[in-house]
Image 1 (spheres, rainbow, N blue to C red):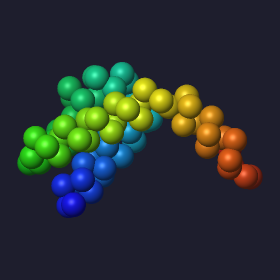
Image 2 (image 1 turned 45 degrees about the vertical axis):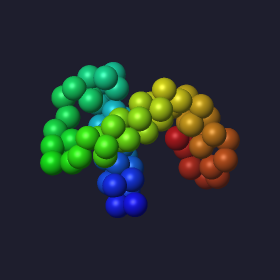
Image 3 (image 1 turned 120 degrees about the horizontal axis):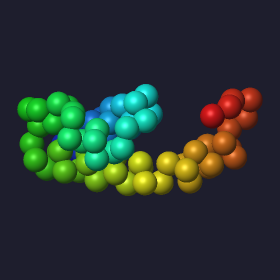
Image 4 (image 1 turned 180 degrees about the vertical axis):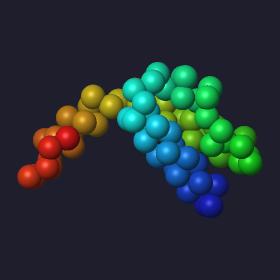
Length: 73
């Protein structure tokens, strides 16, 4: 279970980089050093989460916007 937790943590860091930089997800994956020292299984799961969330950002943002109160996205 620790492996999935680590992958989710890495995916969140990648999404944060994406949000700050505005770079393409593939460019972030190529330029990151976050995968150093993790197993390939952790890295692959983190990539899967990151790319899946990045592909759905407009939908995710809409859901957050529709359900948040007194907070602008």
